[in-house]
Image (cartoon, rainbow, N blue to C red; front, top):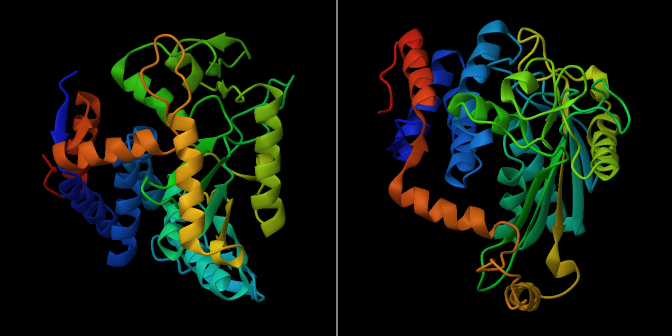
Length: 350
């Protein structure tokens, strides 16, 4: 596979330079780069550097507005609505999360929605920002239609995603970050790059038939919902909490990341923060979180299982390892980054 490990700071610097070459302000460029590398560091490669090429394509074509400035257009004590002006999703979503945290400091809980946005990367990037403030963080996004409702064979819902981050004491924060499809599209693209089959439960081909061929899935295929009708229901609910509630795009009104790159995607997000001290002292809550985590860890393991994890634990340990060893890049992604560097007149990061 010609795998190479590269320090994350070098990759982040390269990403930011790419964005700046395409007109993104320096601060925004660094923010989006940190979001992509956040995913790679935590082992969520489907939301990391593999997205850099399509981000640059959409910036060039105009689907991402490089210099857009998100604005608060409606606001009350514990809620707000932001218009992202068709800019980079990471910029608007970070603004939304920071505003939710600031409002929750005063009111105990706050919710901020975003409309007219674009792909925002890994959901946990935003939810985890609440942790250092002694809060529980929530973030969610919708996406272009790549899943059919249960029993259907045409896309009506995105692989809509959400994350919840909860502070703990002696343990890392508990972080649930998931989409509502059986898999993220990025994992299918990684399988394409690595020329390997995918599980038959991941995707449908363009005829609506389950497939283990990532190329057939990517060629007008669909993601299968997580858990059948349960994943469908959860995806629909997230579309309501983001797109419908914000007044933004929903269902077929949202464009997928890889299609119609010159057109704004009309993605919507929701970020929320819950101040723990509104219920009990943070130290007491952290102790209680440690206790429930330990109850999970102490569960007798099934045959063949060496350890019980809680959500976010594997990603935390992967981040520690990759921070020390570097981000692994397969041969195809290396070549993709080299070509992008050449196009933009930059030096490759390896």
